[in-house]
Length: 116
Image (cartoon, rainbow, N blue to C red; front, side):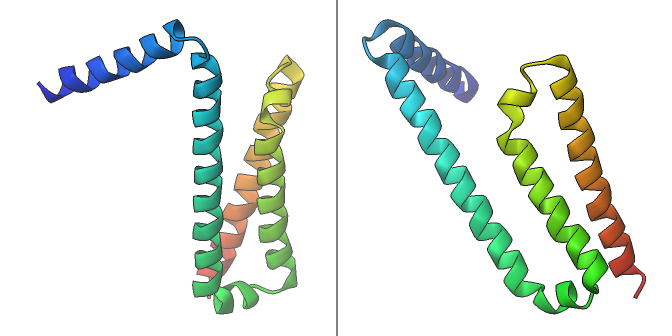
């Protein structure tokens, strides 16, 4: 019964966005608001992780710390450029290569950290 109620709510909201004047604008606003809230939440989460693991991060050494920060930067840049990269076939391939490279760099840093 709960599932039917939730599905009915979603259908009513979709109908309101489709039928009411300005519904698309309101939906765009809600989507932008959710994006900002998720971004702020991620920034707070990463900041908290940094504060709790400062000693471990500095004990990595310059090379692995640069790999960690560089991979984070590449991942953020790739996520931000996602819509433009997904607009073409080669751009999609570039997106996956960049995200795969950033993920592999984080894996290498994690593996190095686990050695000690």
